[in-house]
Length: 112
Image (cartoon, rainbow, N blue to C red; front, side):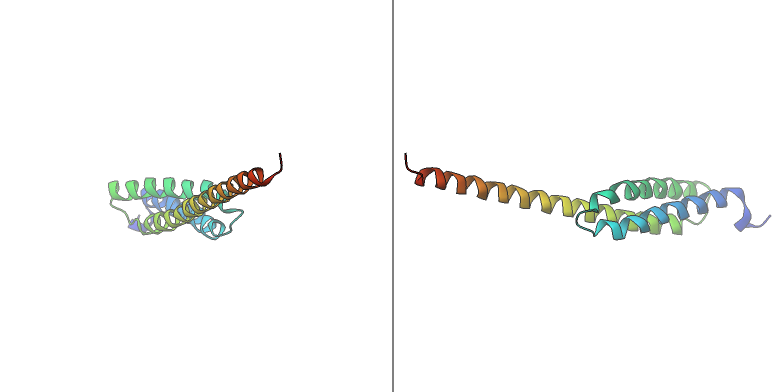
C-alpha cells in the first residue's frame, strides 16, 4: 500500500475536499449584500472541517494543503460576512438617529 492510498490520508483528503467545497460555496455568497448571512453556515462548517483536517494531517504526518486552503477561503468568507453585517448595522443606526432628529424637528415646528 503506497502513502497516497493509506486510509488515514484518505480521511484527511476527504476532510480537505469537504471543507474546501464549503469555503468555495460560502465565498461568493458572502459578497451578495442581501444573501451574505446565508454564507455563515457553510463558512463555519468549512472552518470546522478544515481545523479537524489540519489536526488529523499533523497527527498522521499527512499533507494538509487542502485543509489549509479551505481554512483561508472559509475565513475570508466569514470575515466578509461579519464586515457586511457590521457596516449594515452601523448604517441602520445612523438612519435611525437621523429619523429621530427629523421627528424632533417636526414636533418643534408643529403648531400647538
